[in-house]
Picture (tube, rainbow, N blue to C red):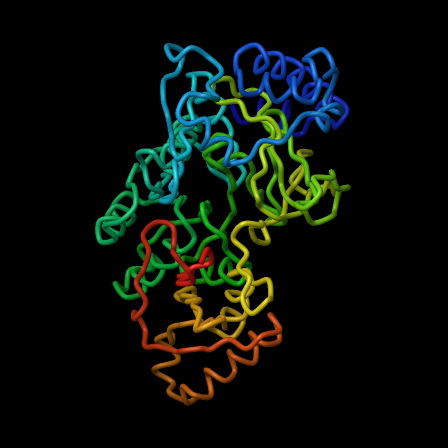
Length: 434
């Protein structure tokens, strides 16, 4: 399968790609108008008929859809095929409000498997590899997505799921895992566990595919050093399909979006205006081929930029940067916009690991923000810098980054609870609705 997908699809000239996208968006708009009342009503409100969409350039005329729309239409309001044609659901990992439930036909799953297979092949994966999947399985898309992609490549697949680190290390060493798939925070934890067990020389990993949560370049370098691998980013949303919507190649300079299946736009999050290539804005996706749960112009709330700059890997699909934050994850503290990724960058630059927590509270009418971060074992062993001096250095770094004073508490190693799935970095105790 490798030659076909690499040469025929992933290296397709832009003119041919846009022709394919135009054919698919025309078909998709007709599909949703005829089969999903929600879309039909939205389009009728704007005076848009399917025949008005003649090519991909007309997509800007379609209305946006947001996560609240998905919740309001729960469970079946956005299903575009008879339920008898649906073979699976997946669901978001959110814990507040109504969950988002996404439906799949068998062909939808086949496309998803294909996208995840491309991601595995982009990091050098072949049928000779042992793919160690410790994303969660079940309703979460991480495990099923990389599992299906690994099968399609023909790799030996270890469906480990998350947790039980002792068993993870046993299988990793006994079966010779070569490609690791999990959240970056769990990859970091596995690096710690491998070092403590003294088994790094028994680990055969060569690459890791990490996603489902934000991570910085500093964190990438730490993971690569601790596991002795190349660490690659992968991006996806349950609403769109799951991991594999985009992924990094060997250049590690942005994630190629699978444009034959997903059309990406960058918009001004305040006005909805489509922004030109290279500008930072909110990422919007349209599913070009998904039939059971087809989303048109879905606002992801992720902030990034797109580029068509030539990539050394030969792929021509547009690349997206790592999300720089989320328009809905941004915290307003003391009147200042704060993203957790900004705080993480400062901590990692000063030599700390990814084990930290941000606690936001309100005392009277004043916001407070405290960052708790662990000493590394090396810092404890050296014992050459007083804790108070370390805290002052982090305070200064955060003040320079954010423009506000942040309280900092440096704690002993392994004080902060580890995550075996998505890490919970922020605890916001404020009641913002009083």
